[in-house]
Length: 264
Image (cartoon, rainbow, N blue to C red; front, side, top):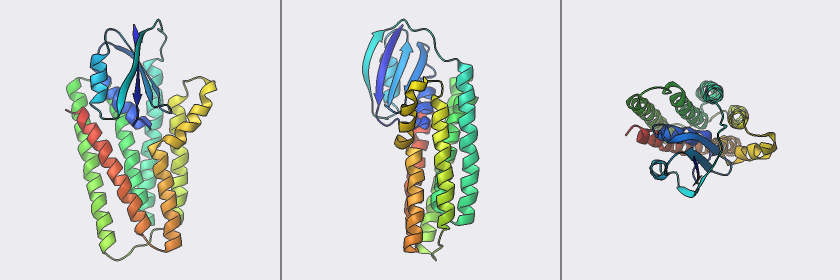
């Protein structure tokens, strides 16, 4: 068996991890995938040469490059059952906060919260695809990816239209306290997700788990909404909320495009 190590510069949250898992799922030579999100590295345990694996990873346009390939005798890997339990846990957390944030966003008139809820929904799609496509045919997985991708893009476009309507129309001041409180809770939820995804690793790597919180796109988004809430209160304007909402909608569309690539 061989061990190939890849550095993936744009792999900064579990969503990218699961996109990569889906992309590589059809390659029979792969025995196990070991993700190190904080250091943006992926170790692939496989038989034969790594060319097919490398090409598939590069097609995702995540800034990947192969670092090394060498023989290994390692055979003990995390079971699929444990991975499924972990994916179910983060799926439930992400989907739960999608509901919380979109309700809070609608009540508090915050496009930032609504956009962040769609980002949570996007992560839920990826985790869901990883779970429900297990054991299915490649065609089935591609169909799921297409439906999820187009659905995300549709929601983001609707969000952009609402941002534009609010920008040119009568100003609706968001509830800044709702923005801040809900985003802090979402920040904690993302931290829990990142911890759960890495809990199978040794306790000595706890500091690496902490560093993931600060490198994750999801966490940056949460901090962005919190900051926007502070500026909404300071400036008495909805512009900061519309700006952060637009930025997150762009990120949602980028994620949807990556998912659609899996459907090709």
